[in-house]
Length: 353
Image 1 (tube, rainbow, N blue to C red):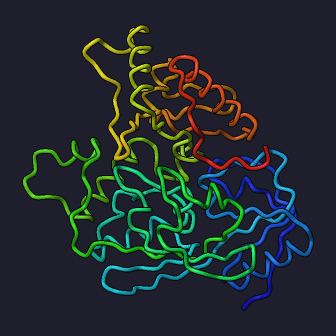
Image 2: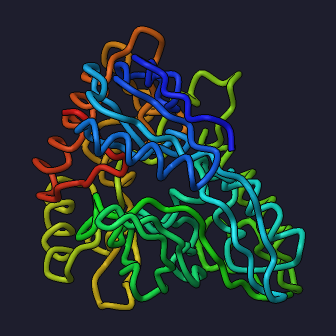
Image 3: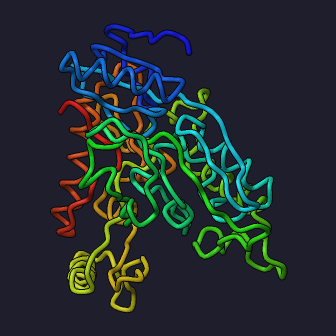
């Protein structure tokens, strides 16, 4: 195992897709489980606070940076178990893992193509898109328990997956470091095409699409919305969707529809877009709410703007700061709250504010 290297005052803007944020007092890129454990032991002995980082695609660091150790998990490796089971190290690139599963004709995560980040980051917020969530296919998560330094496997129920949530970002937020994830997929399974964008893409064809065809469709759709990372595209300085789609009760749905009709945003015959969840609540598109407040695609303040292609994405420009991003996001949230009475939740993890 190579010796542990600790970088001092590492600029965190270089490690995030938003490209903002101050320095980490200490930074370690762990290429093995042993290095991760050694780095955590060092932080414990020195009394440093710790933040676990993947690819930096869903995090906003404050301009003051982070005063302790940022541990970047950079482990690699994919192991095939049974015909439908794959285990990937936490540092593996997520989209490359999806591509591999689809090429093996395994269905279950093809709709999650094009999402930036690492495999280890996906269970934390139960990453989902176009009708799929990782929690539907995760069999177990290999973790380092910071309470006692042991390594163990958590079963799917142990992870407490809910919409954009799990124990890793709620009740056990500081406890576990994710080391690897095991997925149980469907060999030659039928892909999911229940999301409106995909239904429209494949409308009119008799035979169901293959997982590979669904992956290609998702990539095209995400590209059209500016939701694929592209270093040549200035609108790629983003954390993807900055706001979660709100899940509301039926009563709140009716109140929101009434408010929209009073403001002339909905006809009497129209309902709020969205769909009913298995729990009986309603998930409605945050992008619809944002645009109906008058905040259109491309709206900007200072060095920060709404993407010209997708109302959920906040884009930074060179010279922008983390404070500008957060202030801009709060402005958007405030507009939605004042018009519809709904408080949007932020998707990225905000560190140091």
